[in-house]
Length: 133
Image (cartoon, rainbow, N blue to C red; front, side, top):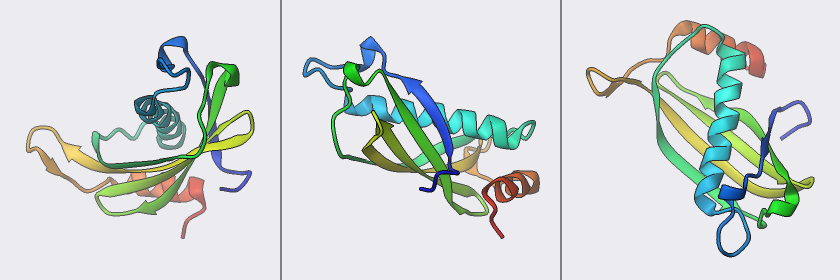
């Protein structure tokens, strides 16, 4: 990702660390979520949708420990579909790439329990922020 990507700093918390002394693999999903929530709040503003995670992939490159103090999660849109959005992430600890990841979120209607189309305003705001055509 480039230096202009959206970045969120997340503290490494004591409860994130497992018996081996490094951040548990499941906690990375929480770090990604924290970055995604901030991104969506900043980019979408008042556009609200419900969405579910349809896919989550994480590649771990080096352990993160309490000594790292925090991670910086960079997030960018890789694909914007009619019903879904794919995000890519890079997780840095002490300026070293610790993990890469991607998620696919699908817009979801709770009552019908089906995927729905993302609103036009959602597309407009993401495209504007990301500089997409």
